Length: 150
Image (cartoon, rainbow, N blue to C red; front, side):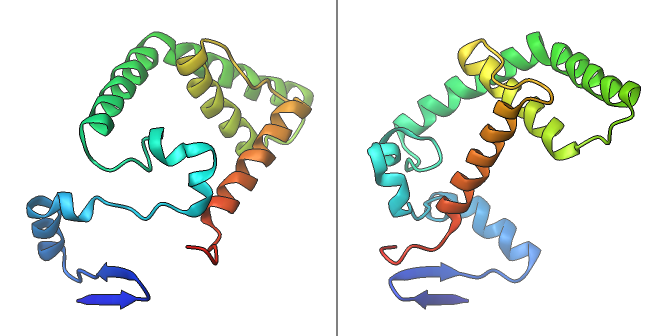
């Protein structure tokens, strides 16, 4: 089924068999995504993997990210699990309730920041970590909120 919502064309595939066919035979046509106006701020749409069209630049950046992330996961994955275990142990020893959202965010942020910058940004039970988490949630909310310009 094809829908046109304003200037946006949308294709709806209702069966798994057709979805597989569309995604294997027409993957390039389906891979484009609408870039929200918020992503145009500071030209993020020109250099950020989520907003780039599938082309040579996107493939090169994706390859670099894949290689670096997998390398760091191999080298650093156990350290993050040890840190996660220590954080959970600290909560257990002190009788505090475990905030899974905060600990998960801290672990994910440290995996990403150590991969990209070789440093841990977040620390357990830190006001700076909570502030960073609130900022990331606000960013996600702003990027996901419909914009009249879009």
